[in-house]
Image (cartoon, rainbow, N blue to C red; front, top):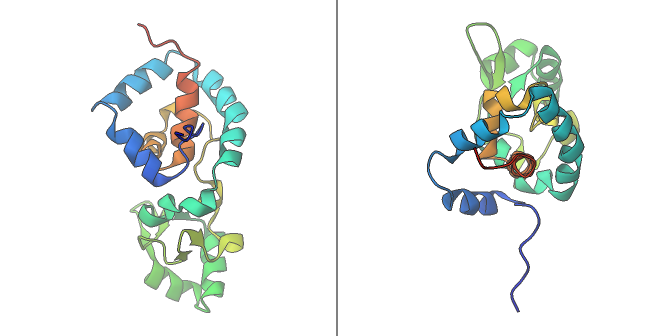
Length: 172
């Protein structure tokens, strides 16, 4: 007997397999299709469906984001992580961060130095941008560049977008 297909793509392997079956350039078509709806309407729909999808997928068992992304760090993150590592703020900044010309700081390391298996070893003290990932509930979901980068990385973002597509007719 064949196992029924799960409702959601739930891990990075399933996500890669699903994306490999898709035609090249599909993301552009998806963007055009979803942009038929107002940004505020999309944001409201993400707020409705996001929690259901997040509850169905064990983010802590995936770890895909921690394997390839360098999270942005707030000044509070820097202080907290420096204390965790028994370093001064300056030592931590020099050893563990990269910065942009505008001063934005990122934890430098991929995979993340705090990743243990697929789980975060400092989960309760993780950076704010990690706690907020995959950033579903920020304004203008459809117009954020990172949404589309995360579509191919994060099963939660992928499933949210797939669910949004079911709300928008495919014919032009």
